[in-house]
Length: 170
Image (tube, rainbow, N blue to C red; front, side, top):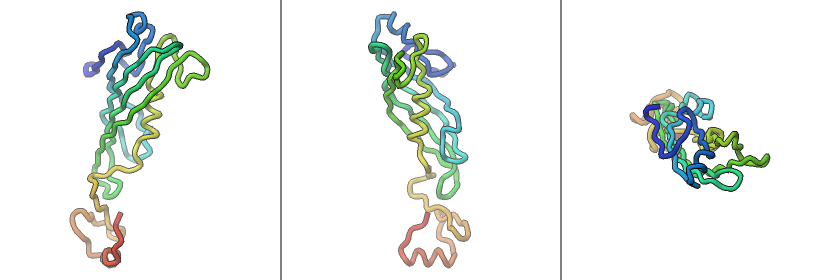
């Protein structure tokens, strides 16, 4: 991939790192940066997709495997949960993952390769937002007539009554 940037050696198509090569180079730790395109079904938001995603990780060799500490930065693109206009939000989540050859390892080492994919996908599943907004102060749509309340108040009777009572919309 032409836009892939990395300071260490990694497989060009995925989040795999050959820790045998890392160890044979005399290093015990190395930094890697990968572009990442996760599967759409990772998100719980309907009609949302993950745009640009980057995984930055430091891999440290330990007895029987490796520890990966890093962060995933990704953008969620979809509809505003209040007004249904296009919305986009960027998130950064940190993670630590342990890889080993023992049966009780958090993630396996296979033929000297660690694959960060499962750890990164699990992080996105658990950390992804349940809602995104076009802007923080989005007022949403009128529940009666569907007017965009960001453009101004509507003339619905229920809207006026709710606002007079001090309740908030959306």
